[in-house]
Image 1: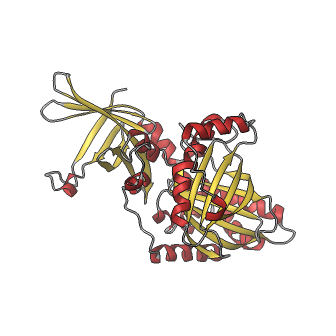
Image 2: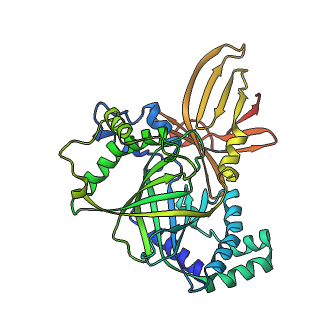
Image 3: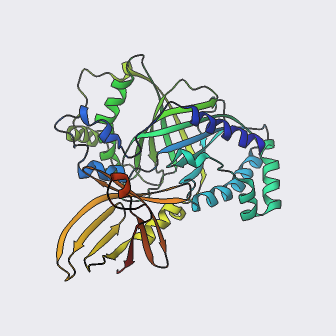
Length: 399
């Protein structure tokens, strides 16, 4: 267990020293607004804002596991024990999901990878608190697990990735294998390579994912930090595959998709812009997405909520996954104004946030649901208004 915590602590230390930074409420589409063509959706279009709301995660932590010779079955039993811990962390909102994967290629220097996905880098701080884990799952059980773990495997590398582009869906998707293409951009060609992935290939794979049940998703990731094994690559494209579904797209259908979305220019040669190594992984085990704290919050928030002002006027929020419709009424019930915005939920350091993503910016607020009421913190003080940080809108559910 000490080795685990030491490895995690090293990553957290690197996080604190990293020069990488992002504007908290800036979307990837906003960051690229100045380089878009007129035929592409605008950065603040509803389509692009909804894509941001449906972003599946922000960060991904990969652990590369080398199994002790002759102890593979014992190692898998250890990971089953750890999955109880990961399920607890997922239910607490400290991570979104955890999974274990086996590569088909046996020449990589590792035997399995563990993958944890997060919305916040601060989630890595004190992630595996021994006292909390033992209290929740039992002291003897956890002591045995911690003792057995280093006997069965060695962590030979860790990598922290940021999600830069992704396909969207209307809800959780099922997949049991991954085709990961590790990309090494040619010297001086990184921005050109990444621009092509985002401008052309992301649209192609979105249409494929919409049409082909065997290919429910695609990601573009960027390497932030690594420890142990030093990777050559700095990007990956990830194809989420479902082996239980049959592909519905032949080569002719894919050509039609390229015609629909617009292919890259004919003079583009991706092989000159980057080197690529493909690795296929098969899922061994994973936590359940539907039991995550964020999924549970969506279940609580769905429906209609009403807040009444002192003068009798009131507002109604109608919440469905990834969308918020806000309606303003006079005290006699006449609709004065309304609008629908993409919406997302995140849990950071035990606090629950919701984001309404508007054309002119993102409204972010801490919220909490208690005794059937939705408490939304007003943050107008940060916009130099008269609102106070201890002011709340209090909604009651009406539907």
